[in-house]
Image (cartoon, rainbow over all chains, first blue to last red):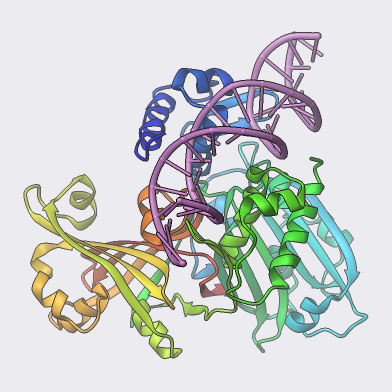
Length: 237
Length: 237
DNA sequence: CAGTGGTCTAGACCACACG
DNA sequence: GTGTGGTCTAGACCACTGA
């Protein structure tokens, strides 16, 4: 296959996909590969970016489907808000799944970041956010167990750790230092988000601090590209 | 191959890589695949994430090399600064390559974003940023030709479009609205950055405005993960 | 030139969903 | 069971580098 023919393959695949109605199923991979005159591996490689863009969705054992327009969660980054609040503001329904709450002993990272002593207990809360039945984000929060009660949290209105902490007025949450990265999905994260290992993700790691600068919560967030639009307004130096 | 054995493969590869001195060359892919008892395709798949992390570097026709610690360009996003300035502040040398300046007629995007009329001329400036000889970012700026003189720009001290515009005091640059995405490299971008098509990139698209809100410059930036650390401080809502 | 990584192929088997 | 996508294999050829 020539250097440009891969581009042509992608172009014809793209027009084939976009010409189809939303929700429709594409021909199976072996058939499509034969139609296009390439091997299945090459076909799959060409389709990779379409799934990243949110153009298609593959379901093992079922097929590959065209995704129509979907709501994009648009969020400025200056303010820290829970995804639930952001989605609520644009009238979008999000749900939570795979909520896991786990207590554990502090590890090296917690000692360093959260300023805890060896032997103290931390709580790790992980969850998957869905819009329209589709997993779109995987969030992991780690914080001292003393700050969060498992039963209170599970009985709360929101599954957002941030919203829970804000309800507790005694904490004086001030800001979050958020680091922005692009990464590829590990097996674990891929499983949570129902994507393939190796797929592209936008990745935040954030330290939430109170007004004294003490770090309260370290969180990792993994977002499917295509479903979110994060932006920030930058001052000219 | 079982579901967990891939993880084991990655683990043993990782420890093999990290135990080697920086700059050293790994065994060739066929040899390594044989050693590990997997096919070359599987080996390459397992090595993908290592290149994303900046742990290794592949060079076609030469070999695969261990990368030692490298300086990470750490930048807050509140202030908009050129990469050259940020790097300079931490004492890091960056250079520019593949500078391309191109004049063209406005396309639909420019009409919409830059508020130009059909028939006006725009200038597109693209360039690759290197640190330590390694391409780490690919930047594309598009702006009205009237704002930038090709010869002035080429003779300037910096190859940064932002720095050039700032020198011109008559513009009143105020802020940049920057959208943050994760994406995979197209053939063109992969070629510029000397990576593989399909590799992961962090991606900004930014509109630079003057104090009246008029958009002066639309830019696209592609960053290799691992070499940059962008962060933002978020206020608690 | 020989040796490297980059790509593609054909085929196989697995895990999974659904009737 | 049948058919789907997910993964892996063995082998081939290409493009590139450097001696």
